[in-house]
Image 1 (tube, rainbow, N blue to C red):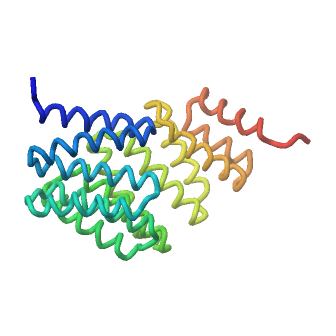
Image 2: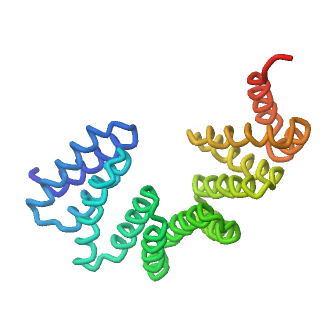
Image 3: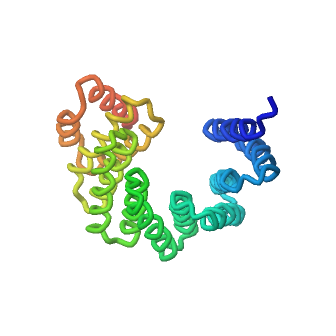
Length: 252
């Protein structure tokens, strides 16, 4: 039908699908196909979207210089067009890139730029994501009180939105925080709650909580660990977890 806009959109979606399954070369090819058409059509918003995805792809590959270049291309267009939602996304992406590079000061600045716009737009999902990242930054600098506050802000929104994956992420991160402050029993409970959700939604991130629970078991000992997980997990899951860890114990 000669619908170039539709073709560009489909290429973009095929790129996202390839990215989700880890085929980064195919994702790159599809995003570039979409970008070529968007440039031909002069569709600046579409170009910003493609640049953003190419940035995410480079970020996943660990090519931070290329990721920054693409993020800046996307952000510049969003700023030119006055696309506030696009700007919030761009600032958040730049924050994550700065965080990955270890520049927590710039990461904090970028996250706050993103958060300000998300709050203006009442973008609750965007706010939750940025609160979570601010919590990670606070935890990294040892400010456990601020980290707890940010994680709970994120958790509250995720619960309001019914985003179970987001709820599990917040609970799991709170568990990590509790372990850092030697509140091991509470940490076990938080990771158990996250694990239940991740099992129910089929998330591959169950391995994160299992690994954390394994470490906590070593911290508090088998009897206390067994009693704690029994309060949060159903009998089947509790037994499976105990059996899994028992198989890893050295004989004798």
